[in-house]
Length: 145
Image (tube, rainbow, N blue to C red; front, side, top):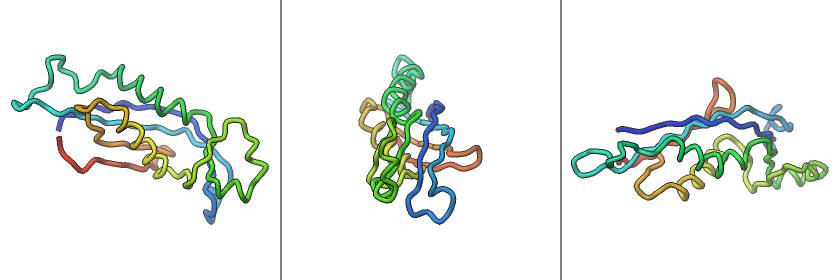
């Protein structure tokens, strides 16, 4: 399988409501997002005449605009968290979710958003969201191109 990956970075704060540990407190991470795409090939197995699966610059624009700009330097909290911590609702960069903003739920949001933005012949193959240097959530497409 021929595919390309681009890496993005952003800073986001969150808290996990109901978690039995320090992650229930408001805290932040320096996230790294790996976005991997592939492209449907011609019947002879070749790429289009450009030779690109997708131009890295185009992928960078798409992810920076549709993902990084939404997450970077924002605070994501669940509505359940805000019920128990009403003063936090005054944070100016707050993004309220119905689900807990775990790395897994963030990854599902990113997947759904990117799949809507990609051209039909480009397939989102894998996402890795590093919350720390040694911990990440991963989503991978099951279908082959």
